[in-house]
Amino acid sequence: MATSLHSHVVEVLGSRIVNGSIAAGSVLLASELEDELKVSRSVVREAVRVLAQCGLVTSTKRVGIRVQGVEKWNPFDSLVIRWRLASGHQGKQLRSLTELRISVEPMAAELAAQYAPDHFREELMTLSAQMNHYGRTGDLHRFLDLDIRFHAVLLAASGNEMFANLSIPIGETLRGRTELGLMPERPHEEALTWHQAVADAVSNRDPLAARANMENIMRRTHSEICGIWQDQDRLFVDPPAAP
Image (cartoon, helix red, strand yellow):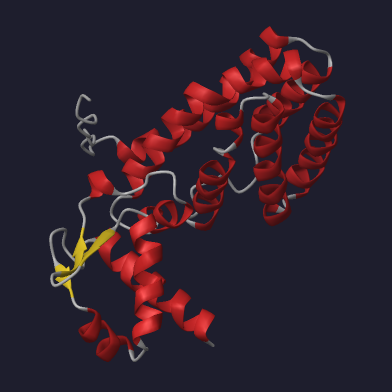
């Protein structure tokens, strides 16, 4: 019960902050949250701890819980990504992650073709074959799970631990696009072919082919959804102060 209440409070407050119902700069009081949400102080405290890790709030003694602006949010946190996809920030979230993927995944494919251990190469081949099967039969739920796993394995196969840790935000994006109806009813034949080609290139230790085919996948993804963010402003975050 405590875990369920904690998750509920995190979800309510996080989604309100991200969608703007609670404005940046607002100060929340734990006592008021207890009364509104009908939960204990310990539940509120734990929820605030999670939101602070997301960068959404900061808690100060004798002041309260201050809501932070979007420039302070952790853009790689899976909760932040999910809340942004369900809010007016949807286009900006998709743009940021799509541009990140275009920058990173082709390089990850190239590195995987050069350095991946055999078990990664074998799993990519298995996943691409399964994606072909379920994509063509129209089982989008199964295809989604396989697609998320394919990209996670590819990132891990690069041997770059920073790339590997991008699998969670990328997985959230793929899941969010599907849940929001932003994916085609069936995967495009070209996309299936390119995923298979990436797996083949990694298996055959062909870095240039792996990179080129992953670039094709990413560019196709960009062209499919770039209209969503066409008129939305970019977010410019100040760099950290010089030491």
